Amino acid sequence: MNKRSSHQHREKRGRAKPHGRTNRSRRDNAPANRSTEDVLYGRQPVAECLKAGRRKVRWLTVSDRARPATDLDKILHLAEAASLPVQRIPPHELDDRLGDVNHQGVCLSVSPYPYVPIETALASTKNNAQLKPLVLALDHIQDPQNLGAILRNADGAGVSAVLIPKDRACAITPTVVRASAGATEHMAIVRVTNLVRSLRTLKEDNFWIAGLESCEGSSEYHHTDLSAHLCLVIGSEGNGMGRLVRETCDMLISLPMHGKVGSLNAASATGIALYEIRRQQLGST
Image 1: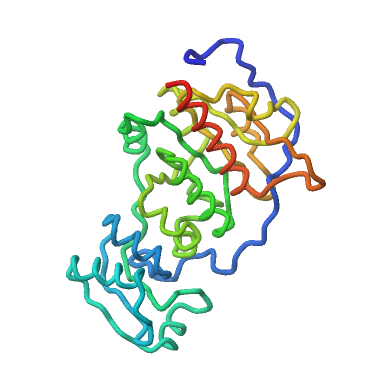
Image 2: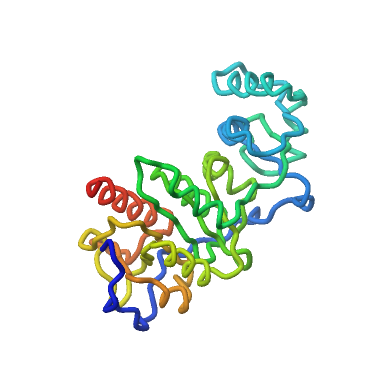
């Protein structure tokens, strides 16, 4: 599978089964002032943001009733090293500022998420001498909790870059950062205008495109050669991949289901597929 074969089938497939349907969070949209500021919350997301150092940080707020703890001490040490102002306020003021979220007594005011150009992302895929390039493309994932969980899995699997559409898809909001446990802060994430065009760009850079969906013509993931430079495509929670995205894939892979429920949610399915890809890639080096 090192060379692209002319007989690779790309015919139209049947309607795909979605990974699973989730309820869209009422906090999936960013705050009204997102163009100038994000407010991250939760101890691990705040710590990861400070460690990554990719955003401009304005201030750190800590509950004046927060008890001493290792994770909080780490945040305060990072803030001190960055000469960052620290505000101490009562817990109810944090609640008023952030709403009904599990902030763990900490929030951080930062610049908006630093997306990267696709050219930069593709260049970064070649920077790791130990891992083969692996890109994740998300076709209109709309639930922020699902997106965050997917990105946490992707970071764990060492994904080189992530592509998400600009329209009709969840952006990287504070809710997503929280759901990813701060993994977003270390990742190369690209917002693309046209996902199909971006997938074709990857093909020109010698990536194979594998769509994860259970439909006619798909092969079980563990019976498929996934050891090449690969881009894994995940469809939306309700509708799966769009027709043009599906037709752009070089192959479709699926997860065998042995129980009564017909599918996994997108985050669980993504994690399984990514680690199988990594297993094969590492075994072929």
